[in-house]
Length: 494
Image (cartoon, rainbow, N blue to C red; front, side, top):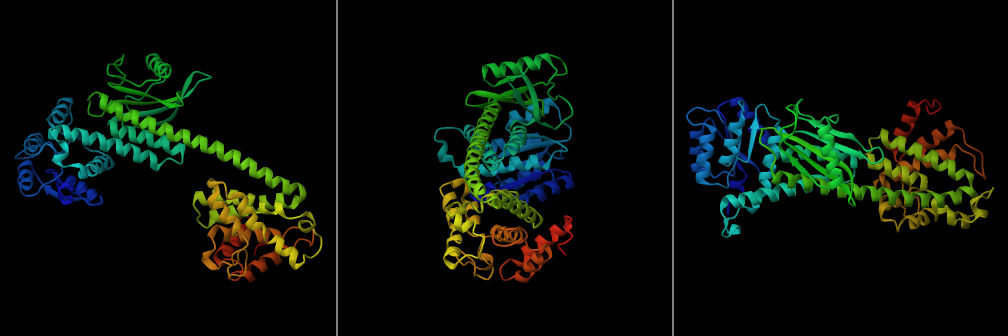
């Protein structure tokens, strides 16, 4: 079995020093990868006789020995070696010759360095499986073919899983990945409007200005309709019309056997027609992506239903105390604005949108004679009021989707100095978004009428925030809160 150093070592052969250095520098950023350099095929063979390399990247035209001859010699020595052939003088005959000789890829100069790194990353995925004993009675060539298919399938799975939380990202990644694994020239993701019986482009990726899918073409529309009706993918290697793509894959996107779109990839960059193997890659991609899209839609539907239920519960408080409704809306707006200004992530903003609206939901358990009391609360009554963050958390707790938000609700009355409730947390032990919520909540409470007191002047509320920064509130949050509200045109926040 090759050790890590052997399978991760890549030899770059090119007589053009500048090109060779660009490739080597890019490969230096690949984890666990080392490189060797050669200026021609003969020099490359000499290095291979001294150092085992798992991959060779070679130019075609080089002095002494060219890339195709080098490829043939490498296949004689070790057919498991991955060889990528590159040239600035492409032709169909040359690309076919290289692929038949055992090259795993054929790149045309100038090429996108990301395309090259994609192939290298696939190769690195295979290194742990390169053991001849695994092959049994199979030949090394057959083993390499199996390994390449498995690693490509693994790559497709990982790419889609990394983008599973956003359908927009899944659509974009589908198109990018389809081009990489198929070596296509153009990719279009078309959504199908069943009611209007028409296709709408969602994503279009072109590596060339030629051979894009023409939705005005009757022959193409006929094939798209057939894919919709049959719910089956197809390869078309003889497209009618001299301006059409030389090779085309159309694959349906399905949710519960209902086709909602078609992924189309056209023409191989090297002029080679698409193969059943490539079609299988595309089918794996569309099936995995469609499943994640369906999961996202189900999640969004479930999430919307849950939020409607919780908002209904909050509305029951608002029916008793009209202040709570407008207060929650204002607090949410202030907290979101502060979070965005302080550099919060999109998921932080979304959490605050939920926690802001629901932060006082625990008051549903507070009796009216306490919640609406026009006078000062007794100590016993105040202790009951202080339970609302815990009650709110307990209401949200069974909902796993809102694990983060329930903690924000629990801790939005904690103080920086540890004198808050319910847990007496101090400083940075308090969740950061709870600290934002605390400032927004307190400012809005101070500047609006309550049954037991009139609204405080904005100027005085600002002074209270400043005076309590570092005591009750996070000093950084207070500074950001006052700054962004001043910039938003609230002149009194001086």
